Length: 335
Image 1: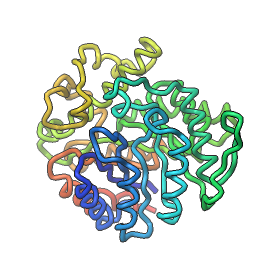
Image 2: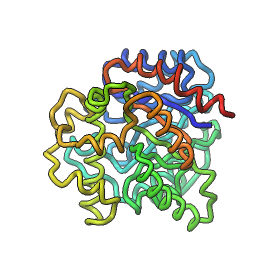
Image 3: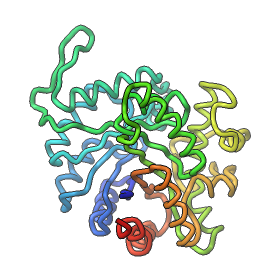
């Protein structure tokens, strides 16, 4: 069954609680919080407060996403072990190399190997197992022992294959079926090389959506998401060179302007204007209701297990209510 989630982004903390209440009321499956501690609320303290307020016993919580640069992986492991205890085992650790929380401070994202090591460390310690770190055997003896799924966010081939080798799943910030198919080829290759079953991995697709018969309006609502993806694409190209991603993604960042991470994801900012309509249509889920259902079916058929929507548009509550009433039943009632 395809699961659906809400991704909270912007401060204040009270806004996160409002989005949590929305997710509970509409019976969404997951609630995610972005981890960028300078421009947005600090994630882990926010989670503790939200979980204490949560009225649902089934809603899962996850980071979209944390990183091993601004966060020491041992601290991340301890945080998730604590949150597993507090939440009754409902945590999901989404992790990447580091984007806004790293770039804003002029730091460098983690290397692929460093991220892989962090994934192993977090999963091991948060589950209550011990491991040797810098010559010292470390364990969180108080951990509940409930495993923490660690989902790896990536765009480039090396990162995607790493997700398949070491992750509990992969996070793709994109709703383009062509890219998702390409990405999963690499994820599955990594899984098979590690002797793992690719079908056991979660595939999380996080994107922006706006349902409307006015396609121009819908596109403008989600265009900033295209600029977010553009930054990731540019990062992959810096590291691996041309021809390392599907050509349509490489082409649209050729004339990308400088990006202000202090205004990350903000819809009213002009820095997303370079993203063409054709790319918006590929990356996001927009347009009339039937077209949105069609796109979700494509993703479901490819093996996507979770679809999450960033809370960045106008009328977000109404949009999610429309999903709960008119779209999600297509996938839950089909079982």
